[in-house]
Length: 301
Ligand code: CP
Ligand code: NVA
Image 1 (cartoon, rainbow, N blue to C red):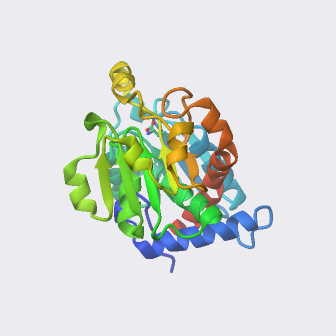
Image 2: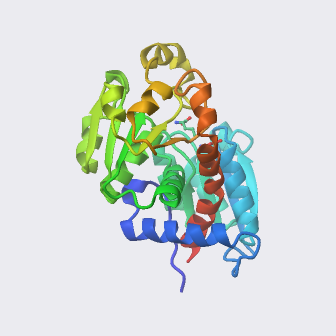
């Protein structure tokens, strides 16, 4: 009998499952358009989003369809949840009608509560704490282009306390690559998280030191969704924590530059660098689709 799985955070994703998803991603990518199986045949999957999305929404909607299922997009403000119906009630209703849920929201606790009460496979499509699907696609993209991340160095430049940085920290703990986070003090990951995760993770406010000899330079927006009221202060404090040509020069000659997107040119990355690395960055975005399929397949098998 098939067992049900949830992807709630990288923190709790076993390494073997990580590896299986990455292996299956390569197959789903290669076999797009002629998948041998339709693991979601006859299923309806809800996408319940409380924040905007382009890539995650597209990749899950297309991925679910291509695996034989039907996606149903629910903007959280349009359902009763937006008027205060509790998550645990929403979950118990949805669990009786749909076969799986992909949730983008604020509090990590809400996704976990949904998984607990719905009884259907639940996937975190971004919370304030983590963005697991993104980092799986990032690692897949690196592996495709440069091979295993083992022994390599990743430099994360910018808001080191955001969801994407957090998921990178858990990935480093599981894969054993070196992760250097370069952020101003105010936006560095909490010592408690670093201690809990372990792994070869260092934090600095010196972006040159972080980029020096790195195999991958990575960045994310300075103002994450939900942090808009802090925009002015964030932009002031994070100015300088930018991937640009001068920083790329410090990394390895064949270093990759990646960005989860959307990109704010002139902030976390400059126009010239983004365009110089557009092939990688948009393949990274495309890989979201192939990874989502592997995640969905893993969740129902
Ligand atoms: N990277 C990412 O998750 O993009 P969206 O917010 O457009 O889904
Ligand atoms: N840290 C960003 C990621 C966007 C994909 C945010 O939460 O807005």
